Image (cartoon, rainbow, N blue to C red; front, side, top):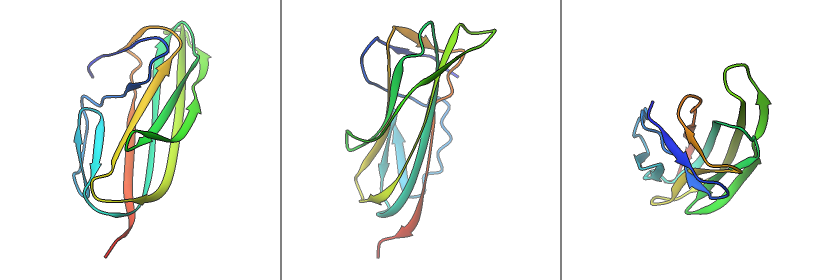
Length: 129
């Protein structure tokens, strides 16, 4: 649900307006997840946007720096002119207070509403003692 505007050639943090967050080891605010449980984590995420051009990128951000980048792959559909899709994953150590976010950069201005499917998942595979 909801709607988000992406301006051309700008990295915009993806929001999750109907987020389902089990706040075990993390908390959520305005597109950013803050880690409270230090350990080794697996993070996955992705985005789907609609536009007349499929060019763009999606990035997972750790404390504001890129840890995974993928070009958006576009395909034509009958209901939406063109959609762009990206799927990201990363595994590594996160400390308490680290932040994780995903941003999307598109080649054209668009409002992501009818084809918005931004998602992010994560789980801690080993807890620090």
